[in-house]
Image 1 (cartoon, one colour):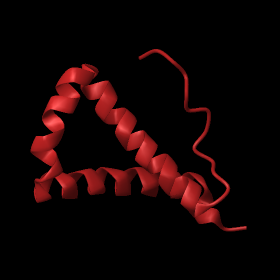
Image 2 (image 1 turned 45 degrees about the horizontal axis):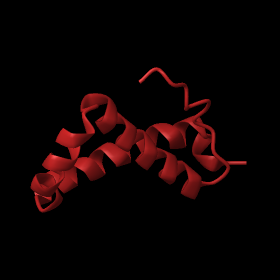
Image 3 (image 1 turned 180 degrees about the vertical axis):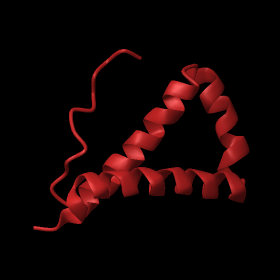
Length: 76
């Protein structure tokens, strides 16, 4: 994946920052497993796994933490 899609971590609102965190997390999975057939085949295995879902939430939280810091926690 050589496309440039992330120009900045700066967002106008925390909501947009959280949505960007989700996008970053999903893109990370696509970079790690670029074969969409395999990706879709594995989805049922982790979709019902509480540990896997907690791990996914943790990755989103880490990305959101990074974005919040980049946005000075939206302080004006």
